[in-house]
Length: 468
Image (cartoon, rainbow, N blue to C red):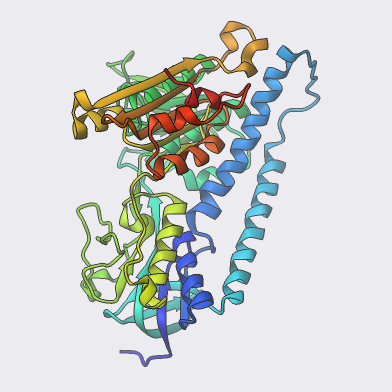
């Protein structure tokens, strides 16, 4: 075994949002000698190929949507040139690079030693790091955090390698003319909306009748119908048999769907697989330390982020619990508090209940708490009351009927107190709206608490405090 070259109190493997939040809190606030290891760019999926560049692209798509709608308000806008996707892409890349630099400076500020390399467990307290320059370090750590995140999956379909994943989406230099996306989760739905509004002919292939299936049925039904109204081609009950190269730019997808059960083909110049993600554990050396995984390869960790091995912890996407950046950040900070913050924090952990989430679709979707069916299953039909409204936001008052997008809200309440156990919203502005209402739900608000709040008029959000 190689000699020990470094020792520390806390070794964090993975420089994504959760790992960095934990490392900075451990070192900067509690003074633990901390080393952070990352094999790629600092910031993880969120900063580099996730939330951040996705939201920038969503903003561009939303601007394109607004320009299209401007005529209804009397604006006559002449397009003198098409959307300059290449310039936009490079500006987005520059923004991400600035964030990478900020993350590294923040580590320095909080006295976290940063190693750019790939880490492999040798035992429960020793790790080998193969650095970017090819040299090696062997580190002995009193405590180790595994926060290595995940990566997108590609199916075994013949020719699947001609497609890209969500990672490759951010490498595109030109906007596709016709794109096929395969998947029904938030990544597929968000990217389908962005492609469509930026000008690509967009086809979304899903295995069932609806997408976003973990969400409340109101969300599923409304957003599917709206995407079809906008002109996105939804291929229900679909499967792909093979992908064939047509020429230097185009490929042919062979598929079946609800309307073509005997098979059909589609020529496309971009194919994006969004069929799920797997934990980044392939060469982590979990077996050498005895760390247990579940059937999908995720590291098993309890609510305190403990693995089955003492002094080895795990959080974020590699655990597969709730794969959201703010969840990993919050869990990381609580773990650092518990491990290094003294007696005051001996029971510190993240509460994984009632975590709000948003899908940056067109329009936006927001959700917190239980779906209607989950509430009925848990509390019984007689103990659940639903408040729902469907309406057209005032923004669309100036537009023809065929151009009006939907807004739909639902409160799921339970018991004689009508405690709000679920809130589901779809429509313009829902992402910003949900953060505030999420506080209310987290605090245990009841329907009468919503009713007691005076409405802000005219807004769409006022409908949530005037439901009958």
